[in-house]
Length: 214
Image (cartoon, rainbow, N blue to C red; front, side, top):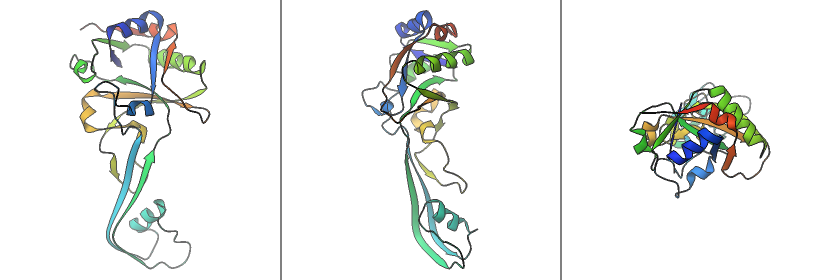
């Protein structure tokens, strides 16, 4: 995986293991540079439309939708409900968490995606890298490492799939960012507390990386 940034920050990472770890809600700030700021980070809506349905048993997909969205509690016994031209919706606003973004793409075109970037770091030892980041974060505030995931590029209004709530709201970005091929590592605070982006330093972080020369 690769990280694109200004050369001075890449050198700090390589030499000292210094790295800025952002937060999900901080990405909403408009002050961030192009390619980073997204005011809708961590938010989405799931909806289900019913044009016309006569529900007589709980296996009916619209009955399951009404139950999952908390519209009706059918209880037990016979059911005879008719629905017409209704839409169920549920909004999600994910709690703040620490996020570290990388890319699965190695290309000079990525410098255009991230305003101000002119250097690239390759993470060559992923296990050591994320373990060291986790240790550094825990030395400041208690966190749980939740893993590393691909970002899904899609609309934030998502049609209910009939089984679950779909894409994780912390792993969605708008279509305009699709060329970034983003990978996200997520750390959840162990306690209900306000968090801010952190500057961490751990030499093992730098040792797990090398500069990519194009």
